[in-house]
Length: 223
Image (cartoon, rainbow, N blue to C red):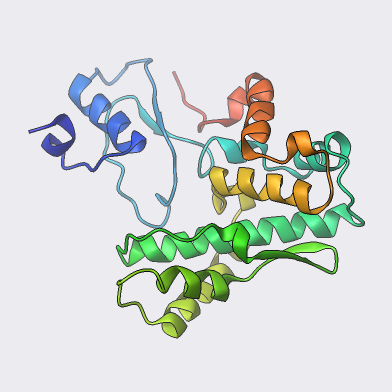
């Protein structure tokens, strides 16, 4: 039996960190921290109580940088992308990310595990802002699976979640990997510098500023 199986955990980085915290069984007053992504914890709680085991402040570490000023500096100032109204553009980006988050959350609630197609195939610029066609994304993804999900009822549930989560801070309803991919896509589609048109390039920029945002990676902890 593996350590993951011992603690009834599946494979994955989050599960490995939980398993490590469980195995070490550190004292209650430990100053060691095992940091895992919050992910869907607010809606699907699954994190066990372990000494030193803490969650990210937002859904994960990357979305700490999902602020208007920071993203504008990357897309507009550094990449020189052609954008008419940044306020409208950023609001559209946040909505795309919330759509993706709610879609993934609904799949998690239903305990359905199948890969979505690359969501960028269902993105386009409409009237100067990014638009995600969720229905197309779901249909094209489900056509390659045997999950038995009925598309229209499923989409209704996703739409309901999007509405319910509209009041949540956008960094709580966005995922870092989606954020990186969307940012790179926006730079490319808005004719920004080619050197910044990949998620790897965006990720490296985040690393440069990680130290400045260290206090925002996890919830405040009283030591």
